[in-house]
Image 1 (tube, rainbow, N blue to C red):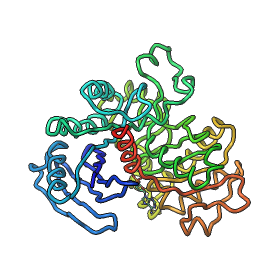
Image 2: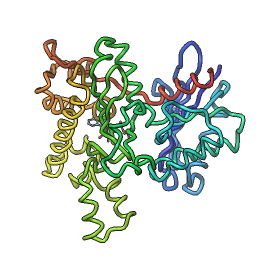
Image 3: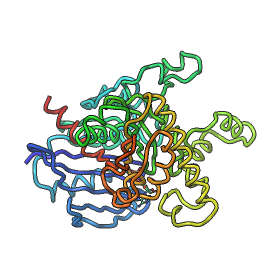
Length: 390
Ligand code: ADP
């Protein structure tokens, strides 16, 4: 049996999945090394949810991503049957060029390192496991799948900021993210409802990171995320769209450093900053504090505003799709957000929404509303197989 390993490395966690490669891809295990450097903890589960590993490690045993990769690699080597034929990595930034996944070699790695300043909290972590595997198993095929690729078909006009044009050439442009999620959901929608999937669609990826994408003919036309993963909707801890004048004010009047500003915008803002309670929508729904109410009202309001902008980008709306943590799991939030789409002709069926059906709009709704669970790892596995087979 041939297998593919999918790796999604973040600042303090290494998520991974193994798929068998046959007529179709089948998930074999799914795991995570969390708390890297502080309280390392490895959990691995089978597709049915059976716990295959659940263990703590001393912080000095797993101080960083390379050591986490080593521990995970050892576990897989000892316990996982099959022949590993390739590793697919989630890489947040592919820059302006990469409109599809790419086989990793030294040149590509050097190119991807150049985008670290554009995604300082993600890119170095995404690249670390690639380097470890390159050193330890240079013969192993590795594939980088980018969160930006899906948006590379935009009309270049839409990806400009209205600042002097030479900055665009330097790379200061709108890239868009969550592309692997959008690509997966768009492909699912094309299977579920081919007629609608080829029309004017908004997908709302609402997790701890949140964004929305307007699609026409299954391709991205516009998205709420731009140069970095800070733009657009307010997120768990990220600010979303903000007047750049606020940043000038904080720099000039509060004497903030760039590092303090980065911390504020990425880690202390969004639902967490607004509510003063939590970055987790579940906590906010359970809280009756004014801050929690403000944060959720603001989140829903901004989603509604952005839906209007994205509908304008594709000239109307045939379908609105909820995905990711909030979108897949919260009927209450889906109902609140759907009410903001009523002017576009969207009408929710409360029973279908509460039941978590695939199609949750009413029969007479002019806009079909769907809940489509995302699967970025499967998307990466598919790309990896396709690339190494080509
Ligand atoms: P990530 O962006 O980290 O991949 P997810 O897509 O898993 O995250 O989304 C995580 C978020 O989803 C949590 O922070 C939480 O706010 C939200 N969430 C998960 N389950 C529910 C639920 N039942 N109700 C409301 N929100 C939920």
